[in-house]
Image 1 (tube, rainbow, N blue to C red):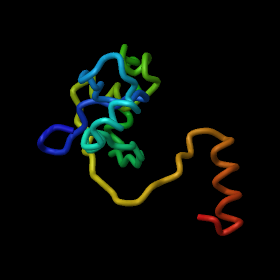
Image 2: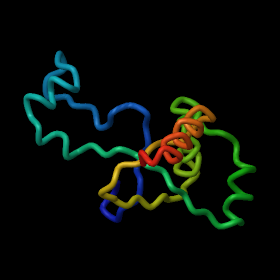
Image 3: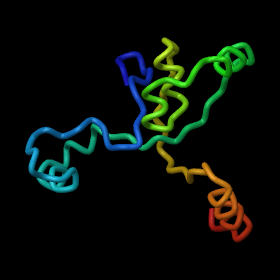
Length: 113
């Protein structure tokens, strides 16, 4: 995030890239320097949009970074819109596919979550 709490970028890959020891994996780098972990966040997306923005957004062409990462929020960022990011203390369960939905529905029905 920037200093005002807006997203700079979203990725499916761990970012930022650790350049301390290029021969090491991310896991090895974190084992050597656990403080590096404070640079990483797990994305739990909950978005709220105004209807006017959604109408405008739906007319925008997909952008290069959106296509590479398969993350539509990058389309907004690449078109100059800002996305507020807030830190939460709980962990969430992602529901991105029908299989995710079925899994989470079962967990709820079984009172696991």
